[in-house]
View 1 (cartoon, rainbow, N blue to C red):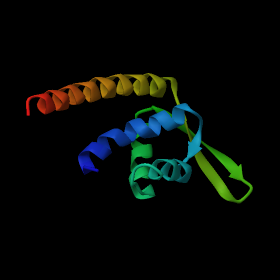
View 2 (view 1 turned 90 degrees about the horizontal axis):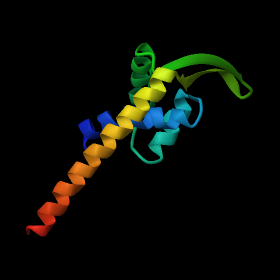
View 3 (view 1 turned 120 degrees about the horizontal axis):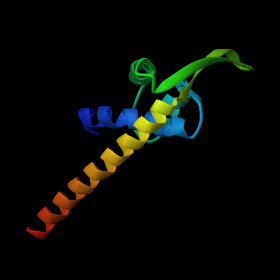
View 4 (view 1 turned 90 degrees about the vertical axis):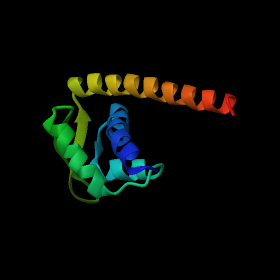
Length: 107
């Protein structure tokens, strides 16, 4: 996948996953990497940025299988931002699909 396209969509993917429930960093990376090639090294700077932007909050929870984990949860601003990103994404995808279909008809 094209790097810039993936980078732009990754924030939306993380926020959409968090809209289904709180997750810790490794869990987010594992979930996304099942579909898109991504590493924890890509996810953690993104998580820091969206935390700084107040789209997520964090909390620590003890783990029965090891050290405590930092969980990420959407804030109200994060929920609004997620809805805005999804609206923009759908408009973008529709426009691209329309252009692709027009090009195929004209061939």
